[in-house]
Amino acid sequence: MQTGPFAAVKRVPDHVRNMILNEIASENIWLFDRGRCEAVTVGDMRSSSFSIPMAESPPAVGCELDNNEHLLLYDLMRVRNGQVMFENEHFSRIRQNCILTAPTACDAANVSEDEDLGKLSTYIEGVRSTTRDFIKCNPWENGDVNLKFVTWVLPSQLSDVSTAERRSELLRTLSYAVYYVTSFFPPEDWYEEGTRYAMLYDAQRHAPNAKILQVPLRERAKALQQTTKAFEVLLVSDNRRHYLVPEGSRSNYLIVSGDESLLCSLEEDILVGITLRVARRAAACARLPPLRHRKLVLGDICLAKSIAMLGTSPGVLPIKEIQVFYDEESKQNFLLAMEDYMQGKDEEIQRAVIAVRYRILNDDGLLRLESPSCDTLKRLRAAYEAEALL
Image 1: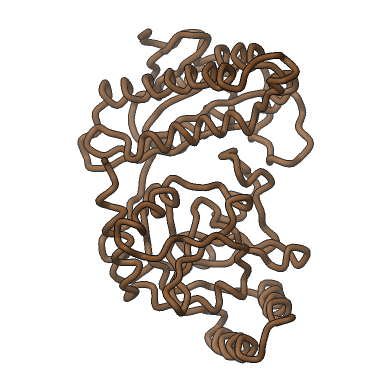
Image 2: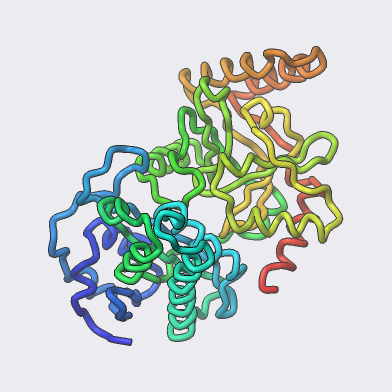
């Protein structure tokens, strides 16, 4: 372990440095660069400057990228009593993120899939070792805290990783940072009373299965959170996708239907979070129905009995109300979504949709839910917490 400001800190792009400085919760950052791990301080980060001019902010995934703009891949882990909660799941997700972001063509390279994944696993285990060492050397004394792993890569670096050897070489040279971030964990009364959500329309992640920062979307979500006083927002697609609501801006969610079924979005439409993965096991432990994955649209949300947020910081958090619309544009989107949902439905469902639409229109766009008193969600949360450090 090297200490002090070495060359690595000068190779951190400005937008990555700014992100770290805006969210860091302690004095120390560990940088891994070119096979060497360096411990630097907030002061080192502030006093250094990137040696190559960079764009001010990371690009939106799905936009045409300049080869001098970095993609940011990251993972957020909750640390409790010196251990990462659900550690295996987190590093499995980082591994999957690498596969999605830098796929190889093993057959063309005459390399077996096992050998290719073995090379990748070596990199992931190195990240795991660095993370464990960071936690050991920087113990957090004030309860739980979130730890962030972030790496940055140029599109030009991803343009030629068609073989295991080339991807292995890329991973050996990939820089990354590990540090504690400012964390908010909902107080216990939130689990008793529920939290507040809002709907963000015409919003979707361009690479839903990969944990890649999409800055413009995140900024829109944060702005809506501020104006509606919502803890989180649900992303609503446009009419071409029938107002699909796959996930939140930084979370998954699940629905408890009228018959106590547990519903969640299709995996192809979402970033499958660690909390969702664990919730599947927790449901079985609590003798609840297994989670059913299917397309979930705005009409399904409005007809739900209860809904829970699933995320690293909140765990399983009941949602008591959703601000479905908040201005004329969002109101029109809501009305169009309800009309779209009723197409082809039987009379019973149509009557239910008309009734809930009436309630929302007469309550200033607010959908009220029974989530805080839902016994199914209480049992799921208890089982989830029991799984935390197994």
